[in-house]
Amino acid sequence: MFHLLVSFQGWPDSGGTLSTGRMYIREDDPVGSRFYSNGTLDVAKLKECPALLVTETGGNGPQFARVAYITNITLGHSETAIQYAIDNSIQPISNAELEGHSVELRLGRFGLSHTCWSVCDVDLFKLLLQNQQKRSISPKVFSLEAAYSQDESLVSIMMPFGAEFNSVYAVLQQSIGAVGMESVRADDIWEHHTIIQDIVNIIARAKVVICDCSGKNPNVFYEAGVAHAIGKEVILITQSEHDIPFDLRHIRYIRYLPNAEGLGELSASLQSRLRSIRGW
Image 1 (cartoon, rainbow, N blue to C red):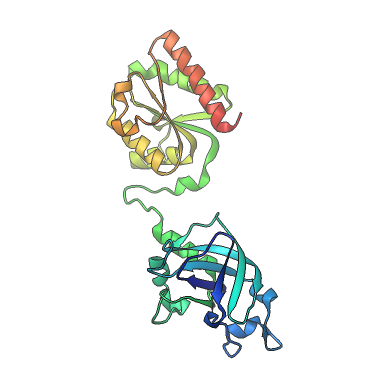
Image 2: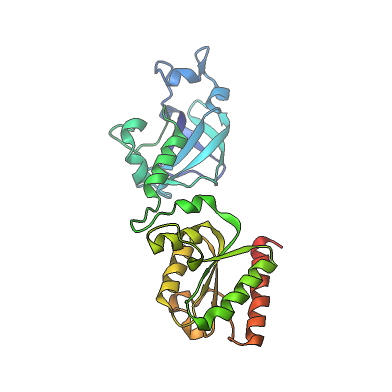
């Protein structure tokens, strides 16, 4: 159960007002009666339920709703003042998405185009969860289930395969181990029949993903895109700045030379970055 507060002007960050005549919480209604004591609206009972703050569709404000908790209510003859605390940890839900639930919310023929305060006998958080699941990314080529079991000490390495990169790979492994983390590369595992699923799994499970863009390897670019899309900490490294795709050049990268001195500098830079990510 939750309060649905709709206003043409939108809702400020900490409190707002509503015409008392637009409060549709009636004692003769099975839902509304729960908020009455001795024939009078009980403020303490009203504060027990979360609220959804909505700007009228077409009103003067953002066309989405935010979850809030009512902290105080001052009931007036013509106007009611409401103080609340907005829960910014919960993603907003758009008016269009809310109107898709018009039946269970009992929005009626006016939908969200009518300023009012009503009570919805619906589990707000179940509604938000179901809506979020509809919006969640669901790839058709691979599964992202591994993202739910991230290993905070795992670093995935995405790089070209070839003898010329063996020394680079060895330095990456050593650098990762030096900061107390573990490394994994696609050729270290074989869990699924499809290679792409194994690659996505090690990206999804990792805290950090290192992508070596040297040679403009298309596989590495694809893997970097997956890592960025699912919110991983991505460290780009390259032997040439010209190998960094144009769309990624705004992101800081580590440039190295494939010789003893260059690999030593790569190791130092990489360890520094990993320690920073871990908060050391």
